[in-house]
Length: 385
Image (cartoon, rainbow, N blue to C red):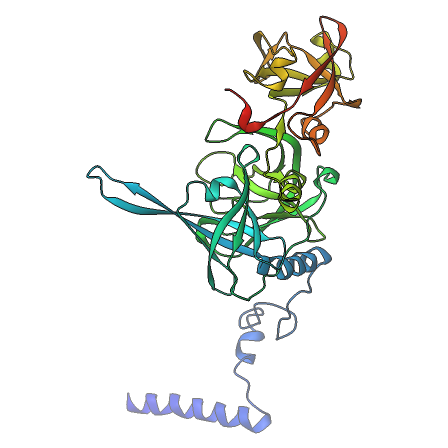
């Protein structure tokens, strides 16, 4: 037995000596010849990987974020409440806003600051400032606040022109969703002229719809175009829990009216007509007995409003078309001050620059006939609901 073991050892030692005598021994050769593929590299290419270069669109995203992020702030609103035992306790809510100049004036949503006893603005460099409300427009969910900068200056954003926004164009949203500071999301303009109801029963008209992700905490932050201009103020989402790709922003031109009024020293009181409308055209308009050019089908009239006083009539019965219930039997607005009414933005566009007490001429179709009425505008606060 011992002799057999010695013989095996001798053969192995002899083989090793022979292999090393004819060249450098490579253990890989034991696998590569008999079993090709075993022991081979698992990938091909250079030993060190390199990151891919950024596309033009990615570069644009990065540049806009670097420019807009410093101008976007986190707003904390403190409200005092009473419990069952009449003990006063503070509650906090949060949102976003953005600076419109270097003097500490910040644009945000009214619902972000409404009812607040104390406002705190936190800038991206983590500095906290007290703020006060300068002006507000509850009917368009807008507010202008002032930060006490104590000698500092804010980076600000340029305001774009929301009347030139087009469906399909790229947009970027910056804000603080769920308190996550400085979050950027991107998307496109999904639709224009949307009307949505807010939690206080108001109707926000002419909204920009976007699929850029908007969540709680984004409210008041900027919606930007590809040039970095603020074209809207992120305002609402579809559904209470979080983004499902349907968000809404108030067009920036609606805020311009409040800003212009404040700059001139006037208290802002936006004029309103007091109607809710549904844009119709084409086959739907013809099926309802109107010309194919269509217009704005009046759905409801606010009691005591300018529209009610002018005799404009809302729908008197409901029908279901597709998945939607609409009111029919009311007037169809086709022109306002000589300009064709074709989308939900037609009304706010026609009222831009107007004040309470000014009149507008409205051309409408009623019972197949053209009717012209004159409506004397009221400030929103003067309406009797």
